[in-house]
Each structure stands twice: as structure tokens, then as C-alpha cells.
Length: 405
Image (cartoon, rainbow, N blue to C red; front, side, top):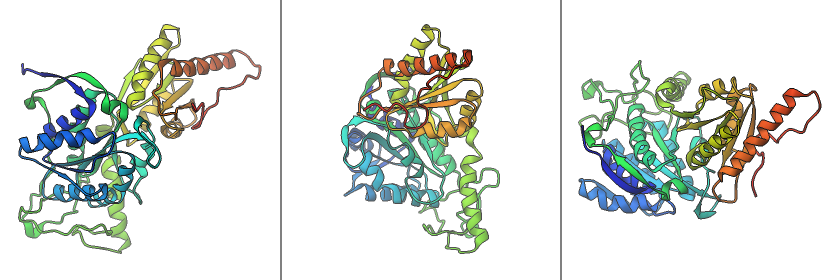
């Protein structure tokens, strides 16, 4: 049995160490609270393993650097928060369209604009999915512990390499700055995925001809003898601009199909008490930690609550939410915003159960009592309404329900 290294780590430190373990050898970024520790640690650690650290003049340039590095075959990473994530969006779209593997860490903070740089929030959830323009696939993972910051950094790179897509690690200030005991696995126990290389000679290589089984094109690296064109324009299999409707449609359909067609392999959801439930709480990131405590306290009071924690936020786990919605009376969705993922829950539930949002926008953590109070309110109303024909006042449901000032 391999020995494990036990560390007392901060979330951002775990992310940096996870990146090293994943094989990252280049970091490009710009300091911004509350993600700066990732850059600071990698500035020291990367040279120790033969890697490179570069601080760019801004977040736009940092995103461009990791795309260029990835095209040479180097696993590359950038980390940012709030305004920096906004600045990365145009180049993030370029990476989506040109299918360049890379990972972007976004440690969410209060906003918009400069907002509250040292406070937690979960306001970038929809930006992670739709921040850059156009139709495009994306994968976003939401850690809720220091250990997951380590594990999901590795997973983010594995998914990025396998599907040739940028992956976003959507952390938040609490997870990034908390410290926990973490057991780091031996390097021999870590599964790493490498991008698929072409099996044809350079003269026969088409950089965007996809494997028919995966919809993912094999990817040569610059410097390996394969000369190919990369453009942000709509392109054909050879990588050159096209305005032919059939080629344009084929590209867009394949880009989405390569993610949507592998949802079962990509999506991860952590579930608690779902075998015996009639009320569900869905939460992600640091909020899920508080929600789990609230669910346990609710069950001690006789409320058969469960917790769904999407580890993969995008693509959204529609099938799992739909299945749970068919077995419960209601879903409660606490999140540190005025209502973002709750809209996806409503869509996925498709009317099978009522959905209640619980927003909090004072840049403070949820307490277990706040979530428990909403669970008790919803549970009481549903029990009362099902046992009487009298008109009763329903708890507010929907995206903006019960926002805490």
C-alpha cells in the first residue's frame, strides 16, 4: 500500500498542488483576490518541477498565454476572480471554438464590478456557462472542500484533455481560504488523461476531423511536425475559414455533441439521504457544507430531507434533478446570489415538484439555521396543504425567493 502525505492545507494551496500533480507546467495569471495564493504558490513550485510561471500585464493576456502553451502540448492553467474572469471571456470563447484544452480557476467573490474582493459569493454561475458569446459547450466543476480543490483540479485537466475543451474550476472565497486536513495520494495512484494524438502522417492530418466514436479530434502539438491552422473564425476540418452552411452546422453540432453525448461520464453529483426522502435541498460549493448540516438537523426533527450537491455544475445534471423531483414534494435551493442555479432546477424539475429559492446577498455565509428554517417552512406548508382543502399561504417559490438582505 502506498503511503499518503498528510497536509494541513488552504484551498488555494490544494489547487496549486493538484495542478502540479495533474502535470501542469505553465501558469499565466495576474494577481487578484481571493485567488492570488494559487499564483504565489505556483511561482515557487513550478520552477521546482521544470515548469514556468509568468505574470502577465492583465487577465486577457494571461488567457492568451495558456491557450498558446496548450497548443504546444503543455498543460496550462490560469486563476482569477470576479473582474478578471470577465476579462478572460473573449479568449475563453476562442479556446472553446478552437478546442484547446486548458483550465481556468475562478474563485468567486462579491460583485459585480470591484464588489467585495474579500467576501464569498456564488454570482458567477451563469457567467461560467454563458459568459462568452455564441453557442459553445463548457464544463464547470464546483468544489466544496479543500480536498476537492486538489482532486477536482486534477479532474478538470483530465476532462479538458479528453474532450478538448476549456474547463472551469468554479470555487468560492470560503473554499479557497479555509484550511483542512488533506491526505494527498501517492503520484502512482493518480489517474491522468492525455489528449489523443493523431495516428496519420502530417500530410494527411486534418486538425478538426473528429473521431467518429467520441466527436473529439486527435490533437497534434506545434513542434511535432504537424503544421496546421488555428482560427477563431468558423472553420472546416482543415482548420480554415468556411461559410458553407453544411460545414458551419457540422462544426457547431459536433462541439455540443462531444459534451452532451458524454454527460454520463462528465457529470458528478454527490447525494445524501436520497433513498428515503420527500424534500430535497440542492446546493453547491461552500453552501453545500452548510446545507448538509441543515439536512441532518431536519431529519432529526422528522423531516425526510436529502441533499443533492452538483459537483459538475455544467453541463447541469438535468436527469438526476428530474428523477429526484419526481419523488419529492419540493426542492429548496440555497445559494449566495439572488437566484441562478435555482432556474436550472426549475427547468429540470419540469413541474414535478415545487422549487423554492433561498438567496443570500450580504456576502456572508449561510448558517445551518437559515437553511433549516426554509426547509421547515416549506415542509409545513406542503403537509398542511395536502391535509386540508382550505386555502393556505404558500412560501415564495422561484428564483428570487427569500433573498436575505
